Length: 193
Image (cartoon, rainbow, N blue to C red; front, side):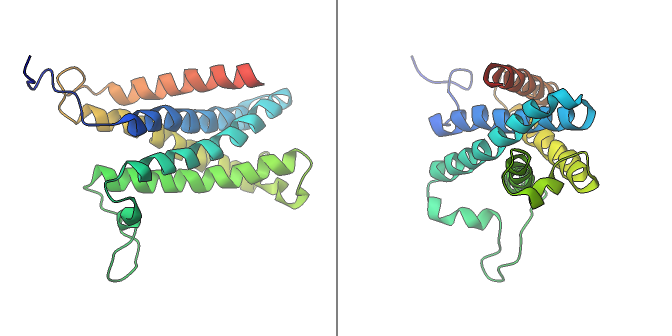
């Protein structure tokens, strides 16, 4: 049987499929942890802490998977910096550029919250300001939650514009990724917590 537009599979390898899964877990765990921290009860803090502790290592795995999938992995930094000037480069017209910057921004917030979660566990007490209910911790949780929201919904939106007959041209795919990410992350946190 010959390949047609309807039967030709996307040329993503397992690394990208694993990125979809781990990216959903990272963004979802962080988003759920931020919601628990900001709006939950004090008894929810251990579960929120677990979400932050899972989000950062998982987003690191995402970066490794995406870099490994590149044809020339040593050139990944070209998505972030201009070759000639070494200035940051954000191409708002490029979905890959937006995704790379979204992953970097989310990774930064996930790292700060990871440090705050470690401090909450009794280590590194000065870093406890990185965790809500304080002002700094609350700002980090809100901005990181928004970055996590972007990360998980961006993947669905990116798939929606790839012109595959099964899932193309739908405005709901980003929302589907967001809901499935949140539900999978909640299940993981409840299972481990």
